[in-house]
Amino acid sequence: MQQSTGAAELQSSPAQPNLVPATEPIRRKRGKSLSRRVGQNGNVFQRSFTKMWNPAAQAYGRYWIDVPGCEDRKRRTVVLGFCSSRSTAKRKLREHIEREGINNSIAFASTTAPAMTFAAQASIWNKSLPTRRRRPLKPATIAGWQHSLNKWVLPTLGERLLADISNGALRELVDTMAAAGLSAKSIVSHAAVVKMVLASAVNADGDQLYPRTWNPEFVGLPIVRKEEQHRPTVTETEVCEIIAGTKGRYRALFALLAGSGLRIGEALAVKDTSLAPDCRVLKVRTSIWRGKEQMPKTPSAVREIDLPEPLAGLLREYMAGKSGYLFATASGRPLAQRNVLRALHATGKKVGLHAFRRFRTETLRRAAVPQDLERFWLGHASATVTDLYARGLQLDKAWRREWCERAGLGFALGYVGLQNVVAMDSAKAA
Image (cartoon, rainbow, N blue to C red; front, side):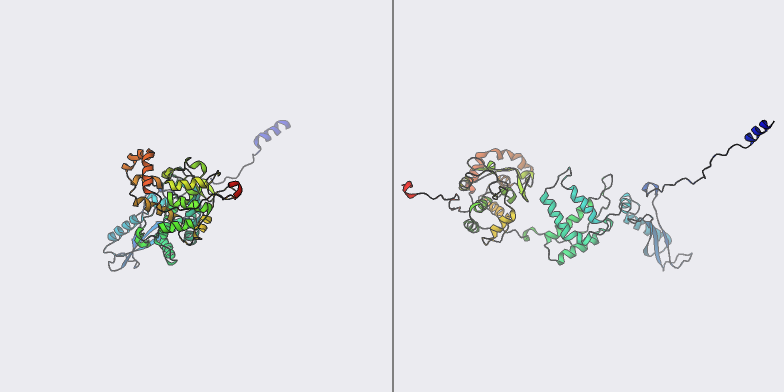
């Protein structure tokens, strides 16, 4: 009996399992999505708070906007002016919302994108330039744009959000540069860097997050007049004075620059293997920038240059017994551009090294050299489709040499021997 009673007790009071208190399901907050919005028309009101519309009172409109860096939308109120009726006020508000692009995808993408400063985006943009698939840039170009950022753009706009880089912000930068006395070309170039950085901010589909319609009149961008730009050159007399005022490698280098039209980076990259055995043809395949070899400036810069015989004779004498870079330091490294420029200025001619290239262009023009051959020697791109059709002329070496001799150097070389003079015993010489 007792056993049956105990069993009944066990059956009547089963062990209670450990119960976990119920909790509410975790709700994940959804982010902002344009697909869940149907657009907005806003609402209109008058501050008199009367039920009847008063045409003599100011009308206002309200609508929601997304603010970069803020989770919740904010109310914006605009003045609509005096409206004859409520429907007129609503129409004006709809036009304002449409004009501001409040309901379109572009405005939504720009206002809901993660808040990023102009300086942060500029860093991302600059790092992508040498590795991008389409037209990767040369280090010299990247360094120039980085200098523009560091010197002018970032001090004014660096800490601002990308969404705040507008015509007004660019106008402030332009005013700063104009007050500092920068030339029109420099101001336009620095402003272009701002536009490129802003345009580089794109979404996953490649659409710009902050598209802008730039207003050059409002911004105050100056007009660049090419005829007013400073392009210093040298005359025939000045070239002769420069060559006479230098010695050794600098004399040969300045003569080569003036007689070939090479860019300075291309000239510093010339090796003994770049020249034909008679030094009448120079092959341009590389360029030097900050002591390192790189490809020339453009595909058209990869070319051959025919040299007049007086210059070829000077180079044959200069390169005798040399190998590697022709214009090098004692350790065999190519000369630095700043040292070449210092040697040029030591002659009293305060011009840039590009002045020799302009001088050579003038020489070719005076000789009426065909323009397609002129562009070929200078490394400029073809101007028309017809120039592309006539590329076969560049392979006609006899025709090129004829025009090379006809054009000449454009200056009298009149050099003294460049090789070292070896003392000789007069008795043995006799």
